Image (cartoon, rainbow, N blue to C red; front, side, top):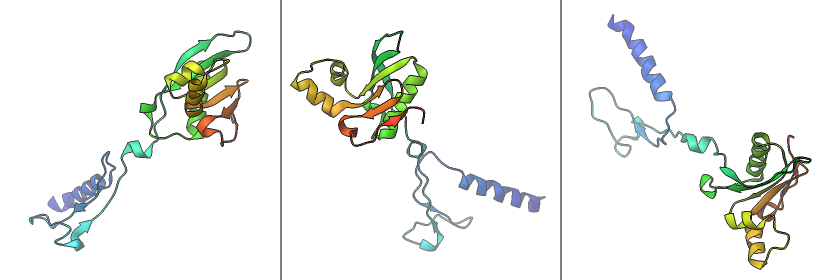
Length: 169
């Protein structure tokens, strides 16, 4: 009976040791049964090193946003100002901005124009016809992208070097 359990126990231990963990594991030391655990410095031949990335580093987080202004235009589609929450991301790319605009257009139609910013001051200034010098500085730093005609995404400010994108492509 014990001879049959040994392969099963070995398989369970192997499966358990191979499963991913939500924490980063840097060093695990193996030792024979009935002996004390050795450290890497004492016996390097019994040391196994493995690293597993935490799930938060494997899956990039989607930046959180909210609509802070909406101008209803039933004939063409609405104009919205989207405010990103800077606490919800560590970095942004043009693809992140595209995804936010696409998500808003999909979840809150009809949107014909959208203005994506990451500060309240930029949100307050983005629709002004004649912003003052301070508002222009805020827009230069925190106005990131806009949706035009319901399908074309134009990157501005820090992302102005990115090429325009077409929503849905």
